[in-house]
Image 1: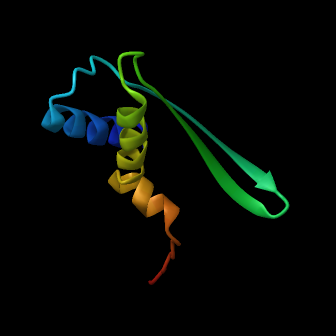
Image 2 (image 1 turned 30 degrees about the vertical axis):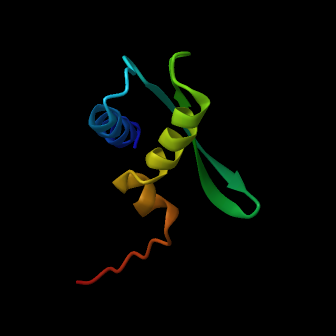
Length: 81
């Protein structure tokens, strides 16, 4: 998921020709027990040169990465034999 987030952000930044030399993504996944649910925490770190407006837009773009979209939807597992 971190790789997908980085690739999505890099494509957007490059398309906009914004001077963003690096982006860091930190991920942590854990499970809560009551009720049982899995939580993925994603922290995106931008350089200080990124404006607040750019930062807010990039956070929206990060949510649109394909893996994020899959994981945020309901997932059904259908097993056949």
